[in-house]
Image (cartoon, rainbow, N blue to C red; front, side):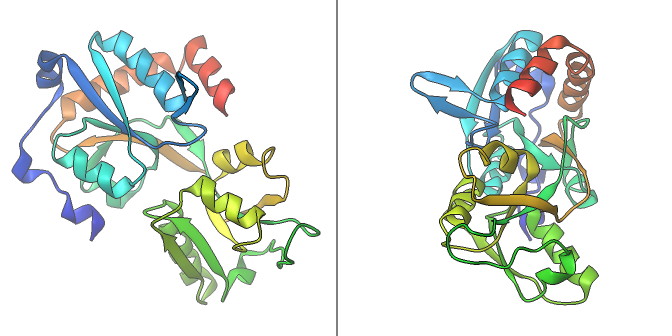
Length: 250
């Protein structure tokens, strides 16, 4: 099982004092057009700009690493290659058994990405989740939408086929829907909204989850780091800086 494979027991602690002494805090994040991306010689993104505020608050250097695979991020966290996973991680009981999650940073939900009528190859535009029965939905590897779709399949009492794609990111799967190469994908609503201007063919009006609380993740044996992050988040979320960064990307 993904979570159980990367429990940290054998790697020991690298908590806040050790991180401060090292002078560097290492953050793994996802490369996409919201969280972390490079344009020319400029690095931008919601997670990246938050990490710069964290650097200023903690007074130590922040090193940010783009890691597409959540599985690889979790392995790197457990092996102390990274200290924080900074990406929109849905807070679940299962994750809390193995990792520490910060206070919520974002509120989000999962949506079905499909084509509007009249664009490309015809596909059935779905509005009722029951009609997902016997349909195939593509998700990126280790996507938070995967668990939700499995639960939804149980709720409707029928099979929803899920294709967990190791090659393509959520953004690339959205592009494949727009190009009629696949019919359905699932991803965060925030990312789907961001890409609507680029892909007017897509429809994202069908929710597949309720609103989720999303946070950052640290190792189970880094409680002091978690406390420091939570204190910083409580302060920064009240600031105009956070509001400006949020408005810029969301």
